[in-house]
Length: 347
Ligand code: FNR
Ligand code: 8K6
Image (cartoon, rainbow, N blue to C red; front, side):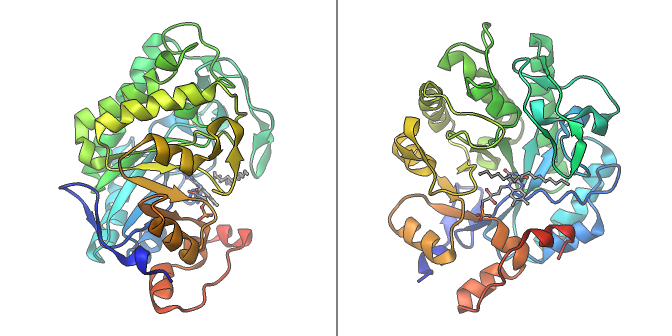
């Protein structure tokens, strides 16, 4: 039974979705060398417009945000033009698409932006190296100054405005998966002693400044946020993180965003300090629209929506394997299984 997935859903007075299925943001590393989206990317997204809403692959807001090869940007006129091809393809087929705005923080690598500093809340690096480019080991970042934080906030807001110029229906701020915004929200990566660290009030400040700058620019109806209260990727959890997220959720609730989205690969993971699953924790502490994600099938997602665990489901890997995911689920046709070698091309 997948009926619950096929109910329309109004995010707010501005945006109504035809169904409850979101295409999850999926980095594909297929932009050209100027980080401009290509026609092949427009075709790829254009094939997936049956989703109630597509969230684009993460899009870097400025050069030093980049941590992987050929991830698209939204900071040059050429990149905006490239995205217009994508959003046209989606809208022509009756779909909707948000841009996911990204800064990788300490997971950035200067190889991609001609040298220079890697910025993060604190000078604590991640172990290891860039996936598939093992010669690029991660560097110890520089703790950002107040002036640099103010500039980052401006650059997020500008990228959001650029997204609207590029025809996107809205933006999802990437506050999840151990990247810059998430780095401020966890004690593992934030040991600051100024007004951006050392207490929940301070640790949520950067995230809220980004949210407020973007909603001020493009409206709360068109702004969403993805968060990872349970640390699982490029980040270690700390029991004190719970208080940070409790306060963040209370603050976010008042801002009436289009939706809040969990960032996780497998929602059956449980976190001691959250008292269970990340999605259950957020549901219990946040009343507005919640998007679940993480190793769900259409059947398990429909059941979870029926049990009010979240309102919408984001589907990732199955959408890579099945451009026609929604049609297949609707008709009960068998899905093609995802495998990692599918990442080599855009189908
Ligand atoms: C991802 N994911 C991800 N998340 C995100 O917030 N921004 C991104 O750009 C990406 N990129 C990305 C690339 C690839 C190849 C994978 C497999 C995953 C995570 C993704 O959105 C989703 O949370 C997970 O894939 C779990 O959902 P599924 O795949 O189990 O439905
Ligand atoms: C050429 C490099 C391509 C790298 C793409 C990276 C996309 C980022 C997200 C995918 C990372 C997968 C990590 C899985 C973590 C699971 C932890 C339980």
